[in-house]
Structures are given as structure tokens and as C-alpha cells.
Image 1 (cartoon, rainbow, N blue to C red):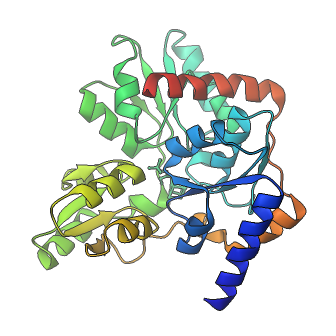
Image 2 (spheres, rainbow, N blue to C red; image 1 turned 120 degrees about the vertical axis):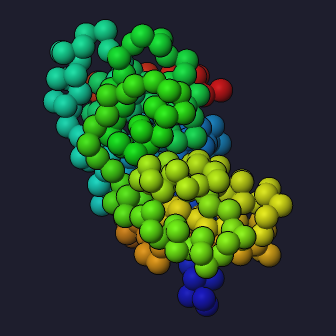
Length: 305
Ligand code: 13P
Ligand code: SF4
């Protein structure tokens, strides 16, 4: 604790001196969330990067989040404290998978979860996050064939909400997809009074048992505002921190014992301090790719608001 306090003080001093805005995801370690200028879900992080008041942005999140900031903010320096922190689901799709769909369906639309690399965003019509996918896809022409990539579970959830068919890609988040129906039923038996709040990256059988399904920000907001006191949480354990800060009396139960995204947790205060000292590693996206990817991200922001 003493060491973290010193690191946090050094970080706060250096980010001011070097004009760095720190944006963190809710899955970051509590002490990382606490030194951030902004903490949010992946949609809010992208908007915060665009609106950042500083010349430099440090993204405490996985690589596609830092890339999104670099795509949306070409005039700013975007830093990652751990460029190896990646999202295995984001990396599961290849540009060729998308090009094949486009070839087979020239009038089809490619809708990408932001959990994708820049090269995929560059061949995408519009990006979405879990906070806005239903709203955005609802605005797309009803007769258009849509290739929703890469998360099968989020795609299944959106298709169900809109009662429309989507072409899906076989991929999932390793952290969320291993929560089972049996886990939820067991937790419900232990806490019959609890509400079940899950991320749409969970398996459809888990989603079917939930009282609320939404992004990390949506889950936090729901728990804080609900008049219930106990919640079974079906997402990465990092969301506990914000709920506990805002509603310290609420009881939070993780849907399963091991809900950790190891990539998110590979970032720590030491790495953030060293990034501020060296102003490395800079995240860049080749300009031709960036320009195309920016269209898909800007369109998401336009359609989501
Ligand atoms: P959110 O957009 O809900 O924060 O989700 C990001 C993510 O990676 C979920 O696993
Ligand atoms: Fe990717 Fe899953 Fe980690 Fe989110 S929790 S960053 S989807 S691996």
C-alpha cells in the first residue's frame, strides 16, 4: 500500500508535468483506476480520447483500446504502458474473413465490435460496443445482410433484441464465455434475493438468466441505482471497484470464482510510471489504415448519440 501510494503520487506529478491524460477501463486494477483522469467502458473511453484536454493520452486498457485512441486522435501521442496487453477475441478474426463476406455479399454491411484490430476496423462499415450495438444496428437498413464480428455471444444477444438475423463469426471472450448456466443457478441458490447482472459477451444460456444485460458501465450504473442490495455479477471482477466506491453498502458476488482478464490485469502502477518517464511505448496506426478505421469509429459515435 505504501509503495502504491508513492507510485500514485509520482504518476500524478509526472502526468501533469508531461501533459498526459490517463484513460482507464473498468477492468483495470483498483489502484490504476484511482490514478486515471477518466475511467469508462470501451465506448466512453473512445469518446474521452477524442475529447481529451491534453497533448498526450495514456490508455490503461488492452491494445485495441489504445489503437482506437490513436485512430481518433491523429494529432495526439497515444501511449500504452503494456503494448503486449491484448484481447484474444479481437485477434481471432482475419481481414480475409471480412473480405470473403464482402465478396459474397457486395451489398452486405460489416459491423465490428470495437474489440478488433485497426486492420479489421479499416474494412468495417460501422463499429459498435456492447453499450450501443442494439441502438446502432437498429438504425441500419432492415434488409441489409449484416456480418457481425467477432463476438458470437454479443451478436446473438443483439440479434435477439432486434429480432433480426445476423451473420456471426465463431469467436468469444475467454473470460466471459466460461461462465456457465450452472454457475448462475448455484449463485442464485446461495443468494436468492440477488439480481443477476451480466455482460452480453456471456453465453446465451447465462444471458437468459439475467435481470440486466449490458456493458461494464451499464452494469455499474444498474447496481448503483437499483434499490436491491445484492448482485451476482457476470463480468470481469474489475467492475467491483467503481460499484464499491459509489455504493459501499451493496453486496457483490462474482458469478464464478475466476473472472479475471489477465491482459487487462497485466497493467500496473509501475508500468504506468515508467511510461510517463520514458514517454514510450507510442501506439501508432499506419495512416492509410487509420483513415479508413476512423470512418467506422466516427460513424459509431454519430449513430450512438
Ligand atoms: P465494455 O465496452 O462493456 O467496457 O467491454 C469491453 C470488454 O472488453 C468486455 O470484455
Ligand atoms: Fe477481451 Fe475478454 Fe479481456 Fe474484454 S475481458 S479485453 S473481451 S479478453
